[in-house]
Length: 162
Image (cartoon, rainbow, N blue to C red; front, side, top):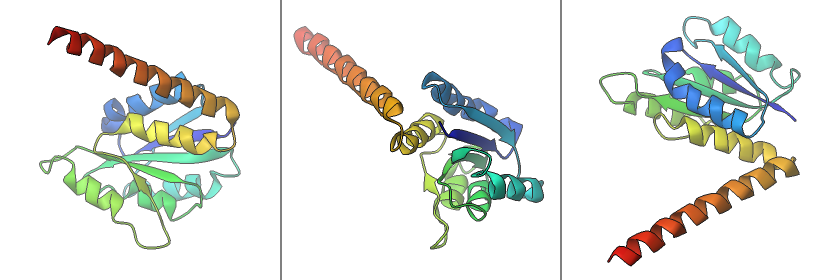
């Protein structure tokens, strides 16, 4: 199975990123976690993304706040899918990070999830890997079925109350 890289621009992003890490582990996806900054360690970030495919990665998740150039900087150096997590880290409530992550130029795509949307970033990475991994696809199907049953049980309980 291909690995997923979870890269954060600062260790202050860890409380958000932990949701992605735990979701990936829950599905049994090999995960590697690093702190690389697009601005403070650009050479290390570039080197990582240039070599990610040959090092066994299938998807890169990049979390950053404020200017949030990390996902784009990584995507510029690889053709692997890159998923950006804009992190709420400033007085702009994460809107700065969202716009920095989602507004990529043509030819350098970055999939972007909601502000602090680490769990969905992990699930999207798992869905990407599941295209060629039937076991992961079955785990996703089972999780969706369980979520459906939970909602239907809640519906039944609430409907019976009124």
